[in-house]
Length: 234
Image (tube, rainbow, N blue to C red; front, side, top):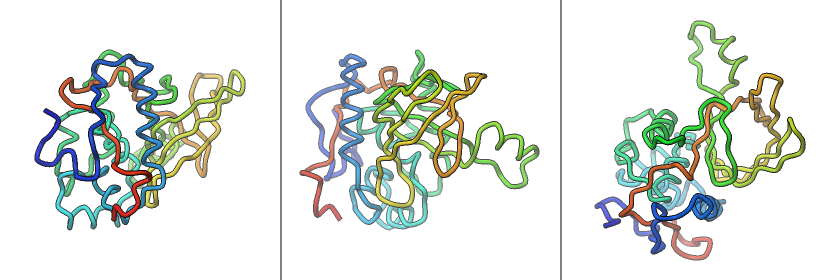
């Protein structure tokens, strides 16, 4: 059975297929389709709130969507839409601060190479985490920032285009404080094999989440938002 009391929300529907039974290639194609279906969804919509905070009260969803940067919450929502079921992805999110760490933990708990680790490999359909968050009073803060960049961020990878041995163009779906947005950044690999993504700030790949290895619930279908580009879901 797909349904729990909080899942899926009324504006998200199952697609009649179970990715647990599918090949890695099929999972990647589906992952990109899911991510593309979310492009442009704004914080003012119920769909945005249900992707990030399914099962929370509307009051809490609305307050969270107004206050938070949701990059890792988007990746958590992507995991649910793929059919991933993990206690860390269950509601409620109100009162929590583990958006970033929990998606890494879900990947680690999937086993068998799902967590790609520092400077890990990734292709279209996977997710990545870059940079890290460093408290201002942390010992060795400047050294940590030099090693990883800051702030921490997560995104769903749509495409990786190789330019040469050290340079790639990486296209992602990103959450933040605005609508879910597609961005393309340059990634370079230095002489030590470290992968750096360059945007408004430069951040190293903290780790990758490999969708072909992600643990998918065999009884949970994959999902898309209802309707063509979902007008009126406010």
